[in-house]
Each structure stands twice: as structure tokens, then as C-alpha cells.
Image (cartoon, rainbow, N blue to C red):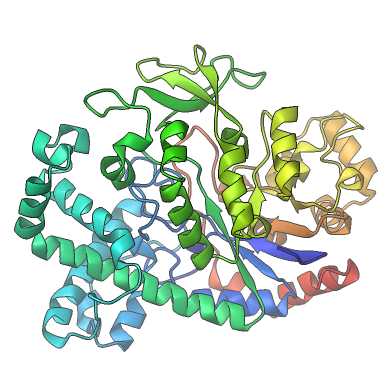
Length: 487
């Protein structure tokens, strides 16, 4: 990411307007990209596009790091491609305002299975030769097994397939052949539509800014396929899990529950899985946010049987060794380190030693500490400056929830009655190489439209209404972008 003084908007794909209950790779995505172009934006930041589980719908807790979320497949494009008829999608009633994941997941699966059956006869989509087939093959078997065993955890599969005995894998690949092919078909559609969209985005001079979670879910095909890569017990269940230690915000810390990596094993394999993962994501995205960067220096490990993070301990990771490989492959410049939270000198030194760009968040600036690194005038060039990330409030929600002293400090700092707009301008004014604003902040939305409140349920569902993305708003954003030389 070598651009100087650019701007972008953070808007998840699921938040785009669509008549099918969730944003997709259809017309609304193309319309949004044209809106970005009119607004003089250079980057579109999105959240992970991986499959989600029904347990919270978080894109950061996925059953696969290589597969795509079938809910983003656009139905109208399937009709255009003769994979569906109009009658195949009648009778469904999708929510317009927020994402109803249970309904969308069920309805879209039903519709996609109709397309699969039609493709069997017409052979419109070639599922044998799409480029990501090998990467998602294990996930496609894994999903077929989960369905076959009525949604059981893979840790409760019969031992022969749980431990991936070759005879057993061959047996189930034959037994579940049709279901596996359905899953391959869905992944083929996902990647076909996504890369068509990405080509369009790039042709307009806009770059897609992706997001790579550091950890995988315990209930993932990644762990089932690569148990040696994690710290596990003999029965392959996690021995240690991830989290963060207690701090002033939480007396018990955060117990995330993701399996932690056996970094010694990863190093012995030449970080093969990690390299494949990075290469795949950098094919999908032009720039990539590396989540929980501090976990590449050292990570908080908790015995899995604990119920809180209090009794965890720090374990050194292999960031230096891993990043040396990325440096040789010239990948460092395409990665932004998420260096928020508990950041020590060792983490800062690791980031700076390899030249990663970092992150700063405006909402962390106004705690009455005049020396805060997050205040706009203290922000350096080698970072991405955010009005807020997906884990933060909207700007309006943030301003409305400040104490009287904090609000007075903000008003003194930006010197304006229109506080939120002035905060956006202050963010644009910084020396940061990239300024990133949430779409909600330009729309003036409150916390009813917040993307995620950590450690709660009911997130990841806010949506843009089609008539909100007006030419007037694009012109307003464009003027700010030009004023601060970020076009």
C-alpha cells in the first residue's frame, strides 16, 4: 500500500441494499462502487467474506478460512445465467432493514440447491476447473460430513473420519459425492461472482481492503484438516485457547475460545498453511488487515477448561520468522497491522522492524489525555486512521454517549457545532497515508446501525437503504476528499 493521502469507506458486503435480505455481489455492489468513485474514494474496506456459523453470525468465527459465504451469491445473476427461473425465487419474504440470518441462510440454500439441480443437466457452470477448487475441497467434504452427522461437532465424528484415516476419507468422499459437489458448485459461484466484482472495482481505480482474522474456529475444516498445527489434546480437542488478559475494561479478561497455534510446528512446515492463506487472501484483496497483530509476537493462552481468561499466560509466537518469509515474497507492503489493544514495545518493534503500517482510531483519542497518540495532530504517516472500526460505535453514537467533560473537549478540539462532520474532517486532515470512515458516519447514523458490539449477540446486520447513497452525499464526500488532498 504505497499510496499517500488516500481515503476509503468501511462498509461490509452484508450491509449493501438487496431485495434478498442481505448484501450480495449483485447490482447493489456495483452501484456502491460507482458511489465510491463519485465520492473520490480509493479504498473499499470490507469484513471477511468467509462462511459464518449460526452461533452469532460473526465473520471472525468461521468454519473455513478459504471458502466463501454462500449468502453473498447474487440470485438475480443466477437468473441471468439461466441457472434459475423467476418462479424459483417467488414466495420468499426478505427483511429490508436488517439482516435476518436464519431466514436468509435457509432461503438462499433452498434457492441454490435448485440452481445446482438445474446445472446438473445444463452444465452451465464448470465446477471441475475453477481455480479455488483444491483450496475449498476439504471444506466441501467437511460440510457434507457435518450434514451427514446431523450437525455434530467434528470432534464427535466416528474416530476413523475424525482422525482422517485415508480409507475413511475415500469412503465418505464416495458416499457423500453429490453433497460434496453441491458445496463445490456453491463455492464456484461465490468466487466467479466475487472476482467479476473485483475486476470492476479495480477497473474504476478502487482497491478492496480485506480483513484476515488471526484465529480459526474450533469448529472449522482448517482444524479438522490440520490438527497438528494447533495445541491439542490426544482426542484433538483444544488444549489451549486464545483470549486477552484482564484489564481496566474487564476484570476477567476475554475468553475467545479459539484454538491457538503450535508455532513450532508451523515453523517446521515452513509456515506452509499460513503462506497459502496469505497468498489466497492477497489474490482476493488488494490490501489486507492482519487482525490481532500482537498475537504474532506473543499470545495469551488459556487452558481450555477454564471459564475466564484470568489464569492465562503469555507464549511467544514466531512473528519474526514468519514475516521474514513475507518480506522475501514482497508481501509486507500489502498488509496493515491491527495494532490496537494491549501493545507492548516488543509488538511495536516487530511492526516497525518489518515496516508494517499500523492503525489508529479517532474514538480512542478523546479520553481527556492531551498526549494521546490517537489525537489527529499526533497521527503519523505510516498508519491508517479510522473514525471507527467495525467494533466501535458510529460517530453519532460515540458523540451522544460522551460525558459532558469529554463532549466539551471534543467540541473545543474540532471547534464546531456539527461535531460529527467536523470529526470526519479532522480525520481527513491528519498525516495518515489513508483515512477510513465508516459508511454510517457519512450517513449520520446512530448506534442502532453499529456493526458490532463485542461480546454481545445480535450484530453484523445493519444495512444501507438504496435511497441513502445520493449524488448529494457523494458530492459532499468528494469535496471533503479534495479539500484535504486525498483524491
